[in-house]
Image (tube, rainbow, N blue to C red; front, side, top):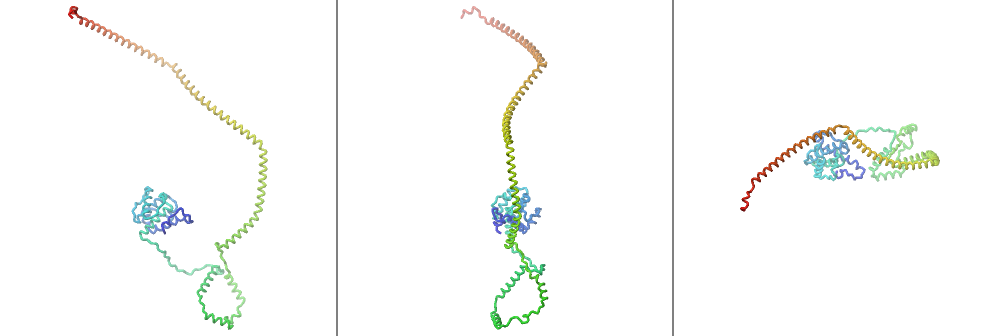
Length: 411
């Protein structure tokens, strides 16, 4: 089978396109059996065997994807290419890319997205594995041969049928055998035919004289007729594929429909009349109720209009109340602040702590004033001493630097 014919084409509109995946999986299963995958893969890796439709139906996506990668790697290695055996926790994208690249190296046409193989089942998975298995069979020199069927000895079959009835099939078989015998004896001897003609012309009868008059007993003849009469009965089996049977069925169904229609037409007409009368009564009652309820409906509409106006007023008043509530909350906050300030001031007025603080401050001021007086006295004393010292120095300098009057005229 060619590779393109084995591949599942999604655009194929044939009636068997849906089952092509199952057919492809069965071919793959047979090829895996021929390649002895049970001993080389399943027993070696301790994996349970796959079913005949394992990759055609979704069961467990992770398990199917791992099984697909394992079998694909084994087939690639067996076909002559080297690829590492995939592990359960390997990156699926890299594993799929390796399998597709190795498949293309064998000439396998894999023109579909790699994401189709991630599911681990479907037509693409079966196509890749089947193509790889075909390559392995070619590599090993395997050729398909015609099946040889064992020779079976055909014994005497006991046909458990009623001998008292003849079927149309038996009659047709006998007629066919007679026709075949006549076809075998299609050669005519002209000499014999000529001799028979001359004998008839001479008036000689070909029948013996002893059978011209019957000597058989009538009672025995009737008994024989009654004995073989059931065998002369012909039973024609009905074939459901015969168009005559379908035509008879159509006529029978037509007659049944016509008889049933005659019986049911009266009931249907009576039911139609009753339904029409009921609809007329319902219509009249509806008109009467509408006339009686018209004033109430008008009052209801007026009340509904008033209710809409009241709703509008209620919404306006609700907006005002909301604004007043907001202002009230602001005033309440300011009042709470003023109360808190008054409480603080009242507590400070009744408390003697400020007076004690004032006394302590006065005492401290007195101490500081005494210290300042002492410092002022020390400074005055120091200033006085400096002035006296300066005065004494000026006096000494004046006496020391005084110039005699007699020396003034010399210049």
